[in-house]
Length: 74
Image 1 (cartoon, rainbow, N blue to C red):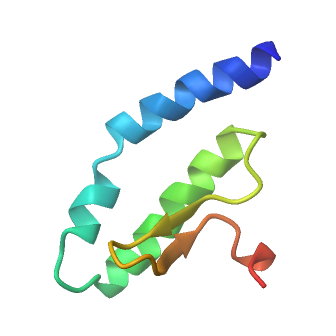
Image 2 (spheres, rainbow, N blue to C red; image 1 turned 90 degrees about the vertical axis):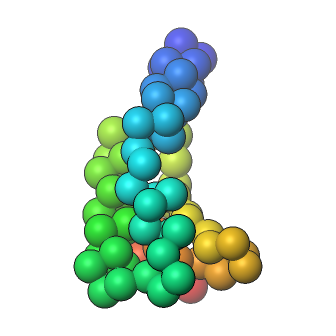
């Protein structure tokens, strides 16, 4: 339980410190480099925290933009 609380506290921290998602998704069209950069951030975060199976970023229309573990997407 202590580890879960620790990870949840840090979860808030990386969201607050990672402006890349907001900046990249604010573009009218996500660039190729943006499409590569978002999953790399997600994979890094997912590697730090064991409570997550897969992290997903959606756009404003609810479409999946990126995932942290593409091998687990069906």
